[in-house]
Image (cartoon, rainbow, N blue to C red; front, top):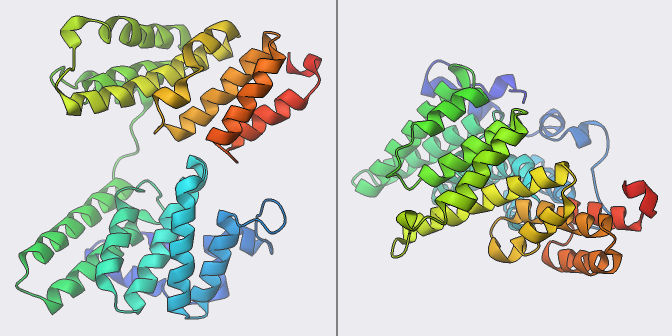
Length: 343
């Protein structure tokens, strides 16, 4: 992912704030930098008249560039709400920059509490975008500092500013420090998680998933089987009466089941896919991205085992459960193709 020079944090936090301030100037060049579709002279869209993240973002930034901050806030808030229902890839693309412009629009209107909340979400919940992480952290720090200036005796605001400083420092170090860990290094880190930790089960699953993604598929799937078939079913690992571990187990099982299904599907074990994952969307309703992908694999497996009518019924279920998701559309396209093209 590219890092725009104006987004790089300089040697000190104050220099970073100056860099952030320099980006707030409206202008067409700024719009082209933040959305390549505008630079190319068009806005990506779906069906005619359909409101997509791209069209909503273009509308919002047009208001921002025109210095119509109230209208920009309304449009960016509408976009932020709409992003809750799109696929993860679009969320990762649009949330960081949406929150960046929304935070600055709040700042220009003097709404620093709203700006703090917005920038904080951008550099915590949606942290990972090298282009906007630093700028969102700087915006968080700037508004927290302004709030404390207005109410200097408020201990909550002191704590907020300390959090903003810590996050800005962390992001600066992550962007200018050593390169990201390799998969093997991440596996070593997961192996160091103690068995008493609530994160232990997810660590077990991530070791299997990372091993699978390294190309050692059989080994990775065997590790996932060990977790699903042995660890979870062992009475010694019961989580009754422990809500924290229960919640973490659900998350771990969702990831493990997804990768186990992906492995079966890749090896054309279609009956295993159907048996394992037909009810994935019911068992793990919060795993929407993996859920849509899993439903696509199940529907495809039904079709590839000669159960065309059931596959079409499953497609309708997928459309109701995950409408407009790319994997639902992919399943629909596959089922419309002649049978010989699926092989």
